[in-house]
Image 1 (spheres, chains in turn red, blue):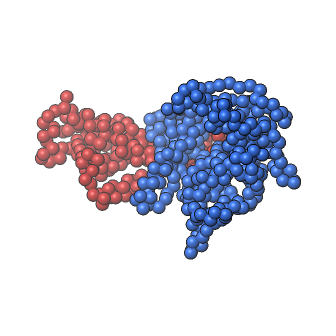
Image 2: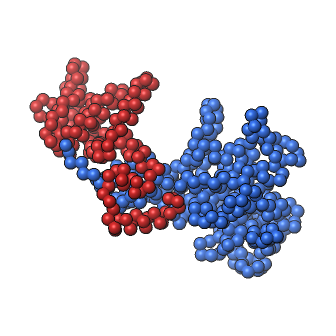
Image 3: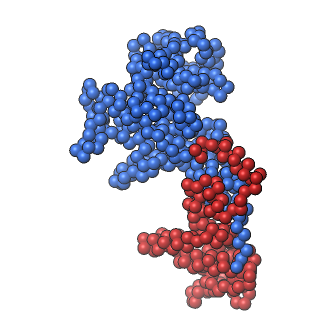
Length: 174
Length: 330
């Protein structure tokens, strides 16, 4: 199913693909970076996304997509090295610094990012955001977590359920 | 630009919630489950056990890691243990604060009784990470601390023989079993009972007290007997010795702790099967049981267990019922 000539094309200038966000913004990006997405990789291997066609992504808006691509472009070289066993400590430290800064953003952006990473099957991004969310949860009470992540105020019914659950595991809350 | 409706966190696909859950330890998992219905269902799908069923704590990995760290000259960081649950196959990581875990010698009401790196006992709740230090080991009459030039505790010794033991290892053989009367999270009148010194000593400390009180330094009247287990049942501590003496303890008497003999000791008869273990179990339905492990002569490498009910009301009769279970050890 893969087009053999697309593999050979890597020898010359990097192959570019076009991605189209839900609000019709076009992003041109190297195929290697877009291929961090398992979903896009299949399409790209089939020769899609080149020229004027573009790959429509109806579930991802342009703000989120540009953030996703920022991650992919930064991580593409390491991913091309097959997990980078021969990457230097400096490279790895730089990626770690980038990752930490990358997720230092508002919870609503984090939400869009993790949804996009899930839809596009970008494993690294998904676990990066999951880790950030887990860190945000740690040491907080259920109500503090709701506030941190912008949940609406609980309905009386929800509040009763929360209370019942907290009562059952009362020893975990002190 | 995009529609980022806040509150959508409650509609996260379960796959994502499971990925986040994998990064949380047990107390946070419980909190996570309280946040909303979707999150709770993710925790249930991941298999959070109900609080009323038992847990198994193992720290085999911890010992390996500690050895490795020592070999690499690394100093100790927080320890991670695995806790297993009988109903599900998942294991959960529990981290202990630095220097506070060498071994665990008891678990009651969701609290663990840990031996820390100075061989002192601490109560630790792995769900809340709350910690309560107990009076130090040097409080026992026969134990002396030996300090280094900088005033730090380096060794212990028993006064009479004078042999030195490293401060971090001393507690491992010292403490056999510790039991809590109730959860310190719920009541502030808890009591900790400890079997120590090879089962020859029984001591206790009440909440807020700064000294251990000795309940007994001899297990029964028979020479060579020792305490094997202790349980808290229906308002009292019960102990069992190797020869089968079961005692009920009253720790509130003003003249000091008093004991009542519930089951008399029987010295070992050469023809009788060899007793390997004895345990006291307080059941949720209100019985106090003694579980006796014998060497099973009919099978190689097997232990036969006998479960006897201990009668209440000072009855000194032999077990009112018993049944046998055969367990093969592999």
